[in-house]
Amino acid sequence: MSTPPIARLLGIMAALRDPEGGCPWDLAQTHASIVPYTIEEAYEVAEAVETGDPEELRDELGDLLFQVVFQARIAEEAGAFAFDDVATAIADKMVRRHPHIFGDSKDLDPAAVNAQWAAIKAEERRAKAARAAAAGRPPAP
Image (cartoon, rainbow, N blue to C red; front, side, top):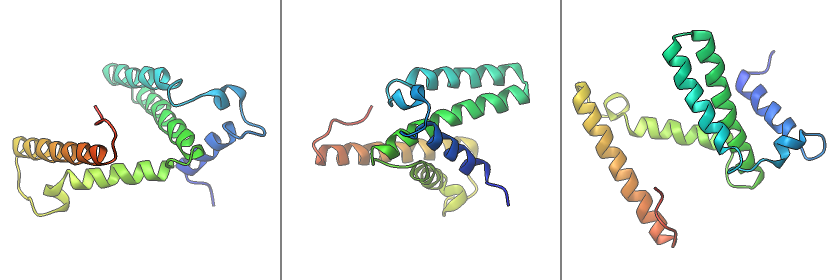
């Protein structure tokens, strides 16, 4: 049985960041130091969309996914969270923000879906700011 692609990618990242035999450049990176690469990859995804070349888009999406895996690995090493936590968080958010699919709000037109999304997102921001204030942290941007 072959390894699922995401498990293989996570394993590659773990090997690159292995303190005993990993890549010196990858080991030296921090959340902040790889931000420029993440931004560059996002722009390259946009450029690939503009060209309409599906192979180029596939490759650039892979590069962007690698940046997510890289950030998650750094966080995991620090004991903050792991890649599965990132995947769980976005899955939960998509279910929460689509009650017209996963809840009781049915038969909405695109404008109503957009309004509902904005209202849910605004409530999430209010709740996040309240949690930050309760913890004595500044609110996230």
